[in-house]
Length: 171
Image 1 (cartoon, rainbow, N blue to C red):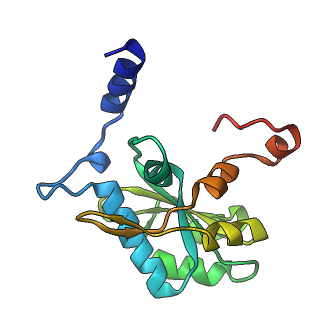
Image 2 (image 1 turned 90 degrees about the vertical axis):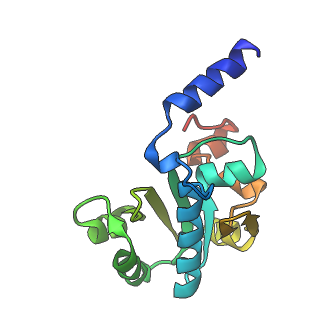
Image 3 (image 1 turned 180 degrees about the horizontal axis):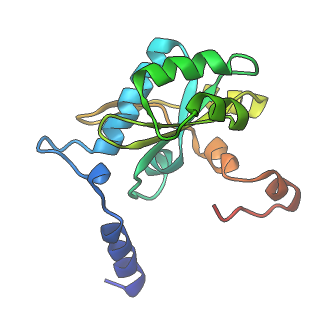
Protein backbone atom coordinates (compact mmCIF):
# COMPACT_ATOMS: atom_id res chain seq x y z
CA UNK A 1 0.00 0.00 0.00
CA UNK A 2 1.54 3.33 -0.98
CA UNK A 3 2.06 6.02 1.67
CA UNK A 4 -0.71 8.32 0.36
CA UNK A 5 -3.33 5.57 0.60
CA UNK A 6 -2.08 4.62 4.06
CA UNK A 7 -2.39 8.26 5.19
CA UNK A 8 -5.93 8.42 3.85
CA UNK A 9 -6.94 5.28 5.74
CA UNK A 10 -5.38 6.59 8.96
CA UNK A 11 -7.18 9.92 8.56
CA UNK A 12 -10.53 8.21 8.01
CA UNK A 13 -9.99 5.92 10.97
CA UNK A 14 -8.99 8.79 13.25
CA UNK A 15 -12.13 10.75 12.29
CA UNK A 16 -14.48 7.88 13.04
CA UNK A 17 -17.28 8.73 15.46
CA UNK A 18 -20.46 7.10 16.67
CA UNK A 19 -22.29 8.98 13.91
CA UNK A 20 -20.30 7.00 11.35
CA UNK A 21 -20.83 3.61 12.92
CA UNK A 22 -22.85 0.82 11.47
CA UNK A 23 -25.46 -0.93 13.53
CA UNK A 24 -25.88 -4.70 13.79
CA UNK A 25 -27.95 -4.75 10.58
CA UNK A 26 -25.16 -3.04 8.63
CA UNK A 27 -26.90 0.33 8.38
CA UNK A 28 -24.74 3.44 8.19
CA UNK A 29 -26.18 6.02 10.58
CA UNK A 30 -25.36 9.06 8.42
CA UNK A 31 -26.89 7.48 5.31
CA UNK A 32 -29.98 6.51 7.31
CA UNK A 33 -30.37 10.09 8.56
CA UNK A 34 -30.11 11.27 4.94
CA UNK A 35 -32.82 8.81 3.89
CA UNK A 36 -35.06 9.91 6.77
CA UNK A 37 -34.48 13.58 5.92
CA UNK A 38 -35.34 12.96 2.25
CA UNK A 39 -38.55 11.18 3.23
CA UNK A 40 -39.55 13.98 5.60
CA UNK A 41 -38.83 16.73 3.05
CA UNK A 42 -40.88 14.85 0.45
CA UNK A 43 -43.77 14.57 2.95
CA UNK A 44 -43.56 18.33 3.59
CA UNK A 45 -43.45 19.05 -0.15
CA UNK A 46 -40.20 21.02 0.14
CA UNK A 47 -37.97 20.66 -2.96
CA UNK A 48 -34.42 19.63 -2.00
CA UNK A 49 -31.16 18.00 -2.99
CA UNK A 50 -28.50 16.32 -0.88
CA UNK A 51 -25.10 17.99 -1.29
CA UNK A 52 -21.77 17.68 0.51
CA UNK A 53 -20.05 14.46 1.52
CA UNK A 54 -22.99 12.15 0.86
CA UNK A 55 -23.44 13.43 -2.69
CA UNK A 56 -19.69 13.07 -3.27
CA UNK A 57 -19.96 9.44 -2.13
CA UNK A 58 -22.60 8.87 -4.80
CA UNK A 59 -20.58 10.29 -7.67
CA UNK A 60 -16.96 10.28 -6.58
CA UNK A 61 -14.48 8.68 -4.29
CA UNK A 62 -15.96 6.77 -1.34
CA UNK A 63 -15.41 8.79 1.80
CA UNK A 64 -16.61 9.19 5.33
CA UNK A 65 -18.76 12.12 6.41
CA UNK A 66 -20.22 12.94 9.77
CA UNK A 67 -23.16 15.11 8.70
CA UNK A 68 -25.93 15.48 6.16
CA UNK A 69 -25.93 18.59 3.95
CA UNK A 70 -28.86 19.62 1.76
CA UNK A 71 -30.14 22.58 -0.21
CA UNK A 72 -33.86 23.28 0.09
CA UNK A 73 -35.68 25.52 -2.36
CA UNK A 74 -37.86 27.81 -0.26
CA UNK A 75 -37.56 30.98 -2.31
CA UNK A 76 -37.70 34.35 -0.60
CA UNK A 77 -40.42 35.05 1.93
CA UNK A 78 -41.35 31.40 2.60
CA UNK A 79 -38.34 30.53 4.73
CA UNK A 80 -40.11 30.96 8.08
CA UNK A 81 -42.78 28.37 7.38
CA UNK A 82 -40.26 25.77 6.18
CA UNK A 83 -38.00 26.40 9.18
CA UNK A 84 -40.91 26.06 11.65
CA UNK A 85 -42.03 22.79 10.07
CA UNK A 86 -38.51 21.33 10.18
CA UNK A 87 -37.95 22.39 13.79
CA UNK A 88 -41.01 20.32 14.74
CA UNK A 89 -39.26 17.16 13.48
CA UNK A 90 -35.57 17.77 14.23
CA UNK A 91 -33.65 19.23 17.18
CA UNK A 92 -31.84 22.52 16.73
CA UNK A 93 -28.08 22.63 17.28
CA UNK A 94 -28.17 26.27 18.39
CA UNK A 95 -30.36 28.63 20.38
CA UNK A 96 -32.69 30.88 18.38
CA UNK A 97 -32.42 28.53 15.39
CA UNK A 98 -35.44 30.06 13.65
CA UNK A 99 -34.04 33.60 13.73
CA UNK A 100 -30.54 32.39 12.83
CA UNK A 101 -31.91 30.49 9.82
CA UNK A 102 -33.83 33.51 8.55
CA UNK A 103 -30.81 35.81 8.90
CA UNK A 104 -28.20 33.40 7.51
CA UNK A 105 -30.28 31.16 5.22
CA UNK A 106 -29.00 28.00 6.91
CA UNK A 107 -30.79 25.78 9.41
CA UNK A 108 -28.55 23.80 11.77
CA UNK A 109 -30.29 20.67 13.02
CA UNK A 110 -29.51 17.41 14.78
CA UNK A 111 -31.17 14.04 14.17
CA UNK A 112 -32.26 11.87 17.11
CA UNK A 113 -29.08 9.79 16.69
CA UNK A 114 -26.96 12.94 17.10
CA UNK A 115 -26.01 13.34 13.44
CA UNK A 116 -25.68 16.98 12.35
CA UNK A 117 -27.91 18.21 9.51
CA UNK A 118 -27.06 21.46 7.67
CA UNK A 119 -29.89 22.79 5.50
CA UNK A 120 -29.17 25.65 3.11
CA UNK A 121 -32.30 27.71 2.40
CA UNK A 122 -32.09 28.22 -1.34
CA UNK A 123 -33.90 30.87 -3.31
CA UNK A 124 -31.75 31.61 -6.35
CA UNK A 125 -32.29 30.16 -9.84
CA UNK A 126 -29.02 28.21 -9.57
CA UNK A 127 -30.27 26.48 -6.42
CA UNK A 128 -33.58 25.69 -8.07
CA UNK A 129 -31.74 24.10 -11.04
CA UNK A 130 -29.45 22.15 -8.66
CA UNK A 131 -32.56 20.61 -7.09
CA UNK A 132 -34.38 20.02 -10.38
CA UNK A 133 -31.34 18.14 -11.73
CA UNK A 134 -30.82 15.96 -8.66
CA UNK A 135 -31.05 12.21 -9.09
CA UNK A 136 -32.40 9.34 -7.03
CA UNK A 137 -29.84 7.03 -5.43
CA UNK A 138 -31.17 3.75 -4.08
CA UNK A 139 -28.88 2.82 -1.18
CA UNK A 140 -29.18 -0.90 -0.33
CA UNK A 141 -30.77 -1.59 3.09
CA UNK A 142 -31.30 2.15 3.64
CA UNK A 143 -33.69 3.70 1.12
CA UNK A 144 -33.56 6.53 -1.41
CA UNK A 145 -31.40 9.65 -1.29
CA UNK A 146 -31.62 12.54 -3.76
CA UNK A 147 -28.05 13.79 -4.39
CA UNK A 148 -27.07 16.70 -6.60
CA UNK A 149 -25.53 15.66 -9.92
CA UNK A 150 -21.77 16.17 -10.40
CA UNK A 151 -21.92 19.34 -12.52
CA UNK A 152 -24.12 21.26 -10.10
CA UNK A 153 -22.44 19.69 -7.08
CA UNK A 154 -19.01 20.93 -8.12
CA UNK A 155 -20.39 24.40 -8.89
CA UNK A 156 -22.01 24.57 -5.45
CA UNK A 157 -18.54 24.34 -3.86
CA UNK A 158 -17.30 27.54 -5.55
CA UNK A 159 -17.57 30.95 -3.95
CA UNK A 160 -18.62 34.01 -6.03
CA UNK A 161 -14.95 35.08 -6.22
CA UNK A 162 -14.07 31.66 -7.67
CA UNK A 163 -16.43 32.25 -10.60
CA UNK A 164 -14.62 35.49 -11.47
CA UNK A 165 -11.13 34.00 -11.22
CA UNK A 166 -11.81 30.45 -12.36
CA UNK A 167 -10.21 29.00 -9.23
CA UNK A 168 -11.72 26.53 -6.82
CA UNK A 169 -12.31 27.30 -3.19
CA UNK A 170 -10.46 25.46 -0.45
CA UNK A 171 -13.54 24.59 1.61
